[in-house]
Length: 245
Image 1 (cartoon, rainbow, N blue to C red):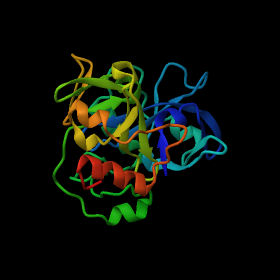
Image 2 (image 1 turned 45 degrees about the horizontal axis):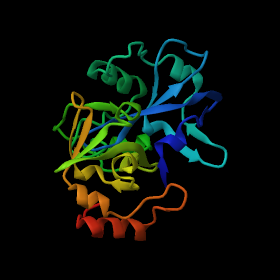
Image 3 (image 1 turned 120 degrees about the vertical axis):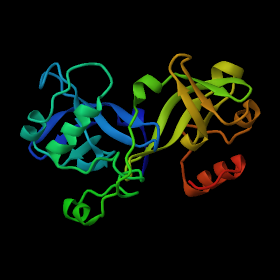
């Protein structure tokens, strides 16, 4: 199921023994554009520390009840490695985090989820997957921080990041929602992360490998009316003449 990041914001987080807070934002890497952590707002519980939840332990998203199920109990979360600083998530913290929960590090291996292109929540099945030697250094981004960054096309600015469309099965970011209304009174469109060249924090911009005209004539995305069906995605990728979703 495809769901917007802003839709998930404030969904309740349900563990095995009760609610622990609400969804605040997400951390994703800009290599595979996959959500690596859901950031929880725990209110008065665990005050002063950031609580990160890996997609490995997310059970399901219930849009009717506006909840996200977590396959952990409160004690496991409370005793997990603490992250107090607002600085970027360090590799040292991530290593301790994955060791604590006995999860396979996503940065070990060539695929989106390390040794596998799929998000495998079955611990016994994960043990059967052969480990690969190749690893990479993750560079985590916050959805809140990237929201509102300007979009720089090949020939000028064309809009800003409005939201993210997430696949809650793989927890990959499938699309960025781009709002062009402040630039030419236009519309909202979707772009795939595959069409992004880089993110520049110094310039507060996301650089894309498309022209302004490409964006202006792209299929419109209406948050109220557009359903992201396979037909719509095919139309979108046919327009951009890009394949390999």
